Amino acid sequence: MAKIPEGYGPDDDIDPEAPDPVYLQLAAVLVARIERGDYPPRRAVPGVDRLVQEFGVARGTARKTLVLLAELGVVRTVVGKGSFVIERPPQASGGGQGDGDGAEG
Image (cartoon, rainbow, N blue to C red; front, top):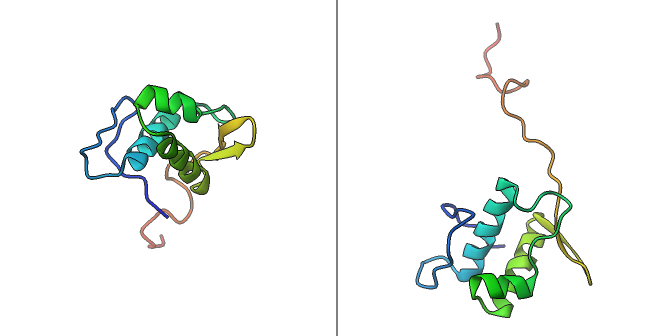
């Protein structure tokens, strides 16, 4: 399974000349927007037609991006309704058990 590349922000443009495939660039931008809160949990991300319009990508590329995000567990696709952001549990931010260096005392 493909890995979403790092270094893309929520407002970045898609660059067909970049080393990363267009569908991975688009996935990275959508994930950045999800993390920023543009698409909150349980709400739809843009569909194929909207992605084609906004980013100028082919329909197959937009579709491939949404399939990848579903495979990675970022969105859940509901036939006839769209792809919805999956709610993630809050990540631990340190201070919990097992975060130390293993030393007792």
